[in-house]
Every structure is written in structure tokens, then in C-alpha cells.
Image 1 (tube, rainbow, N blue to C red):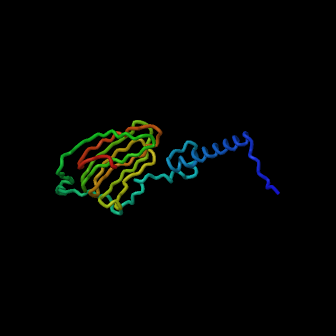
Image 2: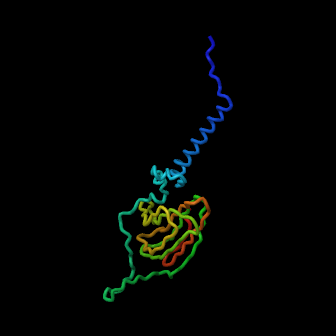
Image 3: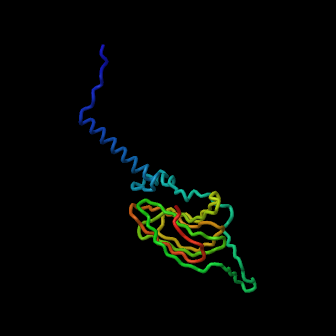
Amino acid sequence: MNPQVPSMPDRGGLLKRLLIAAVVGTLIVVCVVMPAEYRKDPTGVGRMLGLLELTTPIAATATPSAEPATPAPTAPATPDNGVLATKFDKPFRTDTVKIQIGPDGEVEYKAVMKKGQAMVYSWDVNKGSVYFDFHGEPADPKQSKSYEQVQETTKSNGAFVAPFDGKHGWYWLNLTGDTIVVTLKLSGYYESHDYVK
């Protein structure tokens, strides 16, 4: 007795199955994988399902320190005149940096500062928008502290006093499919500044 061999579908049936698999695969990539892995949500389904929250960048996972950021002035003036002055060993400096970030790319840029040093900063992007996290890292990375996180923006400005010795700066995630340029302006008292590898 010969077992019955199932017949193969004809060419039209194979093409139909292949087309259905391609459509289903594309829908899964666009509606699930892109929002969950790359923060790209062209259909809005990822936001509705909460998948965008799954892609918090690495820098955003830093454990915040329990200590508040407090300035550490080295030579306050007498309180009689109501003025608090701080003296620094190094001279005041100003730097402007152009930071190129590729499509869907990410960059981390930090200033090396000692506790109590102060800087004023301003940055903006030439087009599109970015996720950013402004944070600091002391010698012990477990004591990293996040100062500000914004899911989507084009610029930020502020003043900052280092709460501890270490690297303090920004992580940017390009939310566009194009190359963008972040223009960062720093002024104040800091040791150096550079990309973080």
C-alpha cells in the first residue's frame, strides 16, 4: 500500500503564500520592530501599544544619585553684603562645537569638571529633533546622575554647577533618518570637553 504523497501547490498558490508572508512580515517590522528598537513609528501603532517606551537609550538608564546637586563655593564673600562669590583657579573659557550625528545615530559629548565648577550651555540642531539626556558620571559609574531627559526636542539652554568631580554632558539620539548637526556652545569653568567613546 503506497502512502498518499501530498501534492505541491501550483505556481499561483506559491506566489500568493509568498505575497501574504511578505505583507505580514512588513507589517510586523513597521508596526512593532521599528517602534520598539529604533523609536520610529510611522503608523502610530507603536505609540498606541507603548512600544516607544521600550527604547530608552543607555544613558537614560543611569541610576540617579540620592544627593542633590549643590554648588561647592571655594571662597564665599562675607554674608554682610548679600553676595556669594566663587573664585576659580583656571580662567573663564568659551567653546563652540559642531557635532554631526548620522541617520538614527547617537553621540555622547561631555565636559570634565571639578566639583563646584560652573558652566553655561546652549545647544540646538539644524533640522529634525533628538532625544537627549544631560547627565554626569563620577569615577564610580554606579553613582551616575541624570539631570534632565527629554524624549523629543530641538534645543536646550541652561546653567550648571558640577555636584562632583567627573564628566558632565549630553547624550543625543537622532530621531530622523537624515544626518543632523548639533551646535553646542559652552562657557564657564571646566577642565576639558570631548566625545565619549
